[in-house]
Amino acid sequence: VKRTALKVQNSLDTARAIGRERILSKSDASGLERNVVFMRTLETLARLNAEKPDFVLPEGDSELCVLSAFVDMRSARALKERIRLVQRRNRRLLQRALEVCKP
Image: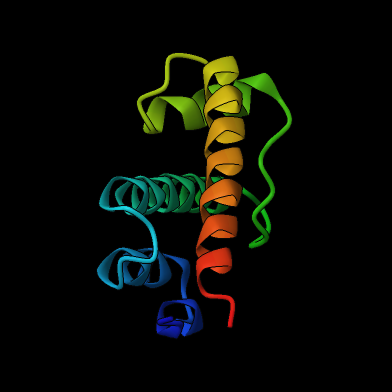
């Protein structure tokens, strides 16, 4: 079983390698890559808007509304729901990839 995808240093390259090495289906790997891009975009925007370099999602709805507009979401609530869905799906997909790569 191929495992080089899981040794890549950054999450986007890992998601791409998982697809390239067919660890997950093409559809799942593509979804994982889109999710990583979404979360990275959110992280970048949050860091640019924060006073410190750590990635912490703002708690206030006004700050979340600003971030949601940048990622084409209609509200802070919609953004929070999208984040929950993306995180849950990423956990499931990565868990499946790790199962495939077990020795």
